[in-house]
Amino acid sequence: MNSTRVFKMSLASVYPMYIHKAEGKGRTKAEVDAIILWLTGYTDRALQHQIDAKTNLQTFFAQAPQINPNVGKITGVICGYRLEEIEDKLMQQIRYLDKLIDELAKGKAMDKILRK
Image (cartoon, rainbow, N blue to C red; front, side, top):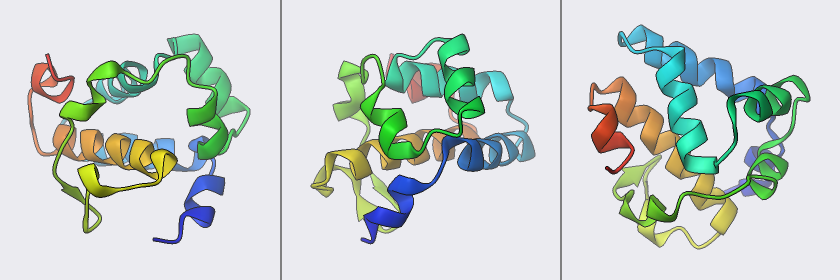
């Protein structure tokens, strides 16, 4: 897995793709934001600041106030890799976010996505 390129991608570049994917399946930007906030502990305002600053994904996750303690409940395969087996912590966090957005786009209920 070539992680260097992914780590240097800005949140501002992937965020619109997450929204487009969700809205294309009848979901909302607010739901995408709720997922990101749940996963990272950012506030709405802090998330917007990270987007506006074009923070790369490595810094975005490093500065996250608190990665949700329930991330271990996020399992399955994303981009051909089993989440539980990804050794690089940062790559695992990025893939957690990808997986949650996929679940949103597939119509899963927010309570289930947020592991409630």
